[in-house]
Length: 126
Image 1 (cartoon, one colour):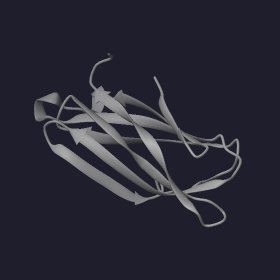
Image 2 (cartoon, rainbow, N blue to C red):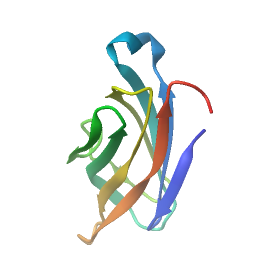
Image 3 (tube, rainbow, N blue to C red):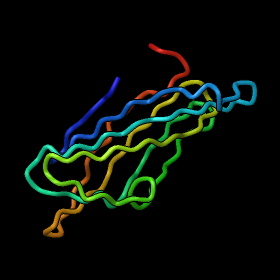
């Protein structure tokens, strides 16, 4: 199930899932993947230049991950266009969550943050 949020014409949707065959519960290693869909539903192009994630793991604690673009790209997303990618994270707990934001730059140089909605990572379907 995709969870989504819209900011300044950018709709960010996320769908997490558990990757059992790469996990090892006996070693407190739970691998989760997530698909992200970024849609420009506005009227101006926007380039994704930065990502900032908050990862909540009840066992290992909270961490922040940030960096340029997503999976090595800084896509320019025009009106009506979509950018999709998949990534993963590893928790020490069988359940946690993620949320964050993407920083976008418009052609005029202005910048804004598009919120990534919080989504739950769990080893079972709710």
